[in-house]
Length: 113
Length: 108
Image (cartoon, rainbow over all chains, first blue to last red; front, side):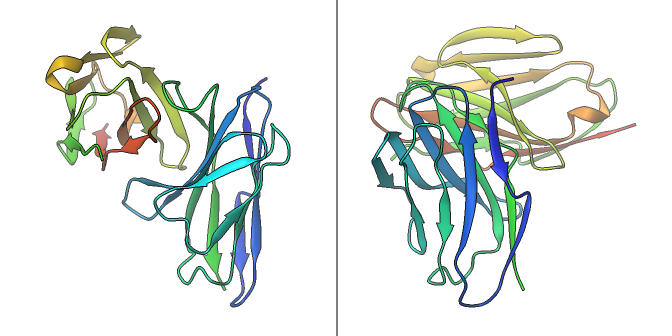
């Protein structure tokens, strides 16, 4: 079945450590997105990519980095510069950027040890 | 940027009741989606509805783009309908903006 796979479901980070969240899609979508959700809040955009080898900062990009080397993959690295990384992270994709419905993965919960 | 409001913020229903959730947005949009986030955090796509009316089982949605609002109707609610309902809107060349959500609790 086509869809978006995020891994791991749960992740723990030590102080000063970088961690990478995986997002893979087999929907042949051009655009991919990373969102952050804090408890009881809505979703905020971290980074997005309209096409392979291109990505743009969203509203809260500080302390995060991404890459888009393959169409199906859009990993997110939470760096040590992100001082409050504990949150629920959701990856999404759409056929094209803008004007297309977004489809979401099941998310990764990141916590600080 | 576009501002999105949702009402009510919280809603408690008895199983079998009907409800209407509202999404207001501050500018014209060409992309509007309704999502249900279940208690496990999964975000389920309910409707892609930049304009018009759609129905899917007990759920239906209407967007009046000229008046900048959308409504989500839930009929004969079930406990599995509990969770948070998000409206998200976007426009050409712009990113999606999510509303703050409506938290629905359906009691048995």
